[in-house]
Length: 334
Image 1 (tube, rainbow, N blue to C red):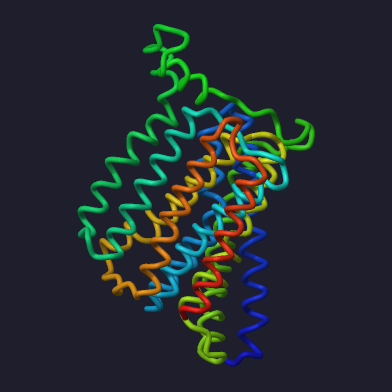
Image 2: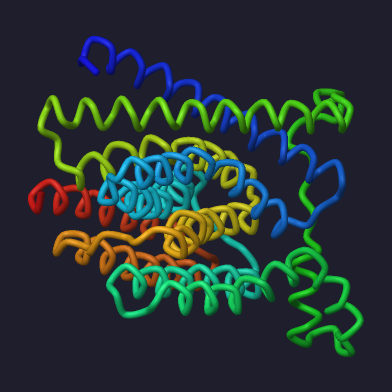
């Protein structure tokens, strides 16, 4: 494919993918508010919606045999998520704050899946072992987010017990994103539009990866840069926009839930599950450094969020600086 064709295809595919992902996330958020879902579940649903571009792009790259690009998309987007979703939200909104109990759940799950995916990519775990251990982590989490709040309420004999605090945190309900009159679409209409959005996300991601790989060959762009610094951040824009909106609205639980769920979904759906069906290429030295950086940044993010009052602007600036260090290191190492 010539650059004259690849450039317009990439730009159109990017616009279609990001636009569809944005609409997908907003429609799921409206459904969550309409049905009275707790913030933790809304954060999970929003992450699933906004993760469509990253996962689709990574899977198409794996199918094309460009494993370095596919893995780079996921590592790059996960690092970008921490900086742009949580760090930038703290800078814009002043701080990001959420109940400690929600942070404990979301942070623990996100960190464990990141460690398991990293061990798999480094060859320390077999695909079946990584998938099994991920299921042990994720299945109880999903059960807790979807139905666990009611169970915890029954187990909470004391108002200040851990079960009681956790139940209240999971039962936190958001106010509508906009006046109720602004969202008059029937529920079945919203579901139909969501299917259209998903189709557009998949089609746009296919065009974006195909054109990006062609341009990378023509312009001699390394796989590390193409995946981690171009496709990764670009496909994460819907996540960043949604997260900043949640941060400004003071919905810290949904914001952090979306950020960590997004990273978890990326690694589970883009690395761990595909590894059961395809053999992943060995990680390069630069890839190992990028994985180490991602784990370290995840730990830094959690430590900043646990501070009294949550993460303030200084912590948000630190995450942004860490991401720029990652970008510079990738450019130098490639």
